[in-house]
Image (cartoon, rainbow, N blue to C red):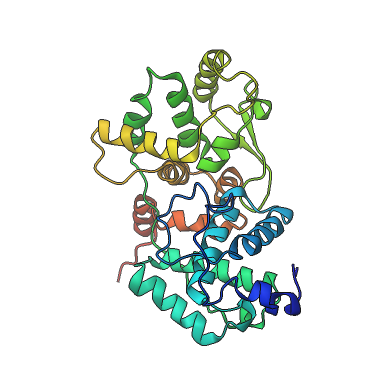
Length: 320
């Protein structure tokens, strides 16, 4: 897995990748352009882009999703600028200082610290650093997922009935349970509308799966494809749109119909899982629909459906 030897990373040329000696201001590289994060406060050493490009190629070679690559490259850049010395000289004290920086200065949430520490651990392992064994990844927070009631979901999806693209997109999110990145990558060739199936390619964990959708969702897709064919010449994506645009659209639609809670594309995924469970669908089928690697991930929805819990308790209620 190593992409470079210790000698190479400790050499004078690459020692300045994360060293203290400041370099001249540089132009933004292709690696860190377009990131939805504010620029780092510190000046970036001139050698840093070369290391990040090697790191990026490694992850792409391992088949990691574009979003994971983007996040890990951003985190690696931030860590190396913070470290300000050769990567292979990283110590447990450096890692603890980095974690404290994320919590106290950057005000990262537990989930964000979890993701950042995983990225740094992967970076250290990739370049053969022994410090990778010292990375303590904090426990992931186990917050209950945010979801909509069926009435709220209906209002949200119906609000886009006059816009073929948004209407079809909300149907795929709400009735298919796709992740936003999966929706953006969905190709026309992945649609089997006659049988109500969507093929999700290279989902989380680089796994393909088949997703079932209802006849109404299929119809909204047919309507949108008829319009889309006039607009997206040469683009095989069902929705030629970026994830940020999808997120903005969902937020705006939710505000328009008066939904006060925070609504994201992932909220619709949680809503589908919660609703299917409430209506009695087996957890194993929900797992397959959502593309969870383990049914243990899907089990969180059993804590959300309090109605089912109340009914089960009533049936088993003791009579002391």
